[in-house]
Image (tube, rainbow, N blue to C red; front, side):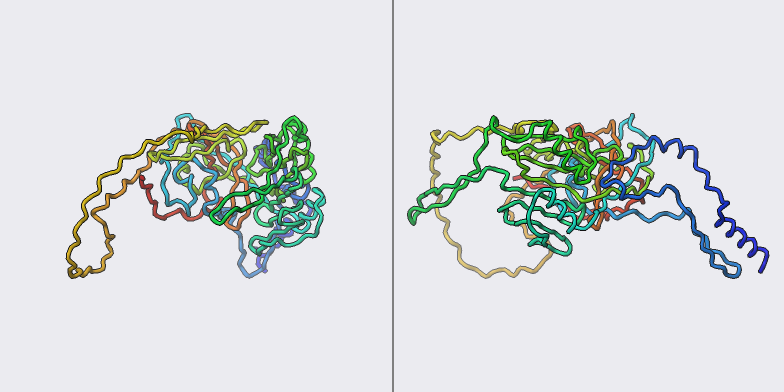
Length: 485
């Protein structure tokens, strides 16, 4: 053996020995560790975070050769984003308001975004989290059946499919309480209890037809007056929801629960909180006026920390507002409105405000009823036109086939409505976590910015630098403008 081989052997032995000291940590890394809030995870203790990296060296002794992995080689993307998955979360722009496959009808305002002078220009970093299904669907649904008191065996749903595996306990026809679990995405589950409401009152209704008198059965659920409702109060609903979802593995406080109520139900909703951010993953439960749980839904996930990654600045993220592929779903703070856009199509801009407290039904536009006693002025008949003498039949001309469209000169073409272009200056942004779906249907939480539009809605943009996730191919289909009636 040469001296070089002996030196290599000595170095490998020393690196594997117990006298090798731990690597020095960066002072910046140590100083920032205490300031980072731990994510509020589902099923604490199931996720193991590596506190330090261990280096295993494997030496293949070959004459004069040693293979070394390049530590600076680029990492593969964490996941490939689903095509069109973020479109519904981005009502702000022409591209963001429509999914790629639906982007053929142009009824939007074409927003052009520019960064304001005071918008941040510094990038940073943020955590990426994988929302991984936990357990098995059979065990999850069995546990939920015990929790909600649903009788029956676990069975495949009538619409079970290997690509959409769905399981059920209880009847699927709504005749009794049931639990359903779909084992894709976040493993969402749904509890339904039709017996929570007063039994419907049915009566026969008669009506006349040309064949005589016909009858049908009309069933109506009686309305319970507010003074007689047994539904929980706001404070009670918050406490009950926190107890329910905490028992199912969600880390939640009663103060984080939002409650809304009307004559038919009292609903409590809470969102999964990770790294201090309320995310778009929500859980809900509702009580009927009889005080029984009418329905509930949630997810079967644990939160896996996949590490911190570099992010672009808010100013750089403004350039992504014209590319739907960078949009993600924001949490409840950024779901306050939806703009249904039209430039000159006669559709009014609107923003539906989200109410996070006990409220009555949202007031809508009042439409004046038509008075049936109003008379309609008769329309004077027009003079009949003289009949046109038929022309003598002649020889039909031979029309050569052509790729050009046939245009009838007697029909006036419909005018095309061009979308209105509006320039919006983005003055501020807020960091948050956004929900994205990958091409395999799995859910992720990634860092992003929320930027409020002057019309009230929010644009929520992923802030990861390029390469951390793989984007789908941009939409290259034809945009068909809206035709005016």
